[in-house]
Amino acid sequence: MDHLASTYAQQGQWDKAEQLFLQVIQKRERVLGNKHPDTLVSMSNLASAYIRQGLWHEAAELEVQVMQTSKKVLGDEHPHVLTSMNNLASTYRHQGRSREAEKLNVQVMQTRKRVLGDEHPDTLISMSNLA
Image (cartoon, rainbow, N blue to C red; front, side):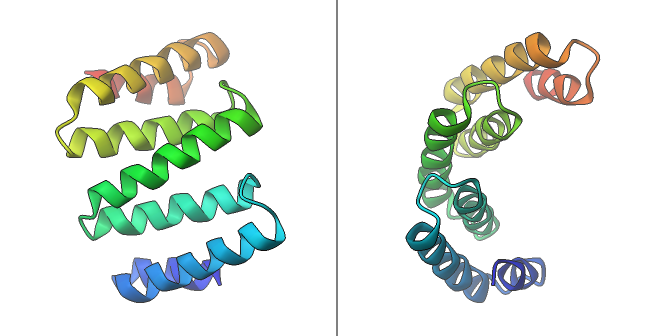
């Protein structure tokens, strides 16, 4: 179902994608739990669908939840956590919440520098996000 929802999203069929993503999240929460990485990925997918529809507030709420849960489950330095922080920073930037976006981007960049090194592509992307 998650793949079908992603297909709908790629085709711009946002209502169908949103409904399927919601169903996937509900089922994954019931079967796997709300902290399982697959559940968190589905939540991120739904947030992306919200973004494509201009539903920034809804996207930000989901992204905060994904980031906080991912940190608890995976730890502050896990790549998925850093990606979720980066996604939230991007959403904040589009909402005009520049200070919050910058704070997250700085955290992501510093962590990636420490963990991956200065030359890693992800670190360089983080640096460009702050430019």
